[in-house]
Length: 469
Image (cartoon, rainbow, N blue to C red; front, top):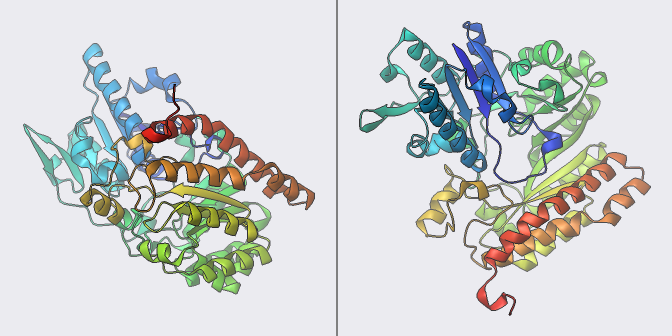
């Protein structure tokens, strides 16, 4: 079969066009399908516009579309485009939707597609392709939802794959325009030992922490990624979820001299900073930046989010990574039931005082599949189901201690007050060139995205603050 797999892009501008990192699900599935003899191509819309490939895609025997929540509108548009093309060409091209959003809302997905793959999709998709190619029954495929006459059938959930080494390496060369990738993704694990209320990782991949074997990861680095580029992003939700295993991997990387051939980045929690041996190994293997879920500097908010950390943990984390010469990208989440304009302003002041290199002020976003979504839905506090706005830049829920307008405005001001001209000029003057460039780019993102957010802010403005004619 000729198969096209598409990663839909978010509906709104998010500033990451220069830092596109494909999700690994589709390249792994593509490698599996290619091994079975199928003709497979992956399209990442944020990397390269898929409409230039529309003629080739329309020749497919099956089209799979992966979507996270803010990309759902485009995913559904693509599915409708295929259905319209089917009518014109009088050719039935089945459409399969997968990814976190439709895993939690499969019936919504089936309004637009023929099949929905729930949860981890590697085995489910390959079995579906076999069935459609004449090799099996749909009813036998775990993790699959589809229509059977007038009713919707949800087959039993598929158990999580415990042995991640069973999956082939993600074949990035099957991505159209892969040579444009500036940062190459790899993963060592799935799942997370933590269980934050706003996060869908545990619902999707389990709280159990499943790791690939370290020799397998090193082999993928040496044989598949480094021939393509030197910038490597470990996309694990928590790279150091098992510190001992992470240190063993880094020791292997150090022994093989990989730090001289690459520089790398990853996501960790503040708890990684407690292990100085881990930090030394990260430094020795040329880790240059970490993305840390700091979330809040208000102890009440940290408790509400179910974050097992304190403000002192945050300070120590930033201090220790800086001590090792590793940049910190601090990810904060604004809009808890404890937040008001004062706590948000205090968050910006904290980030600047601690010398955090770059920050992300995300708005609390109640994603389907999370306890936050369930809570706000039960309290009738979801302001919209326009999924394109669920991108952490737009307020989509009714806050407890401020209006939606006030929260949106405070978040926009937070970005503006951190990414100032002096912030990047001072970094350059201190010869922190990477920090200076990233803050300069951050300021460009803020300015470019502000026009759209200003329009959204005007829509949220209460009547008493509307300009008078």
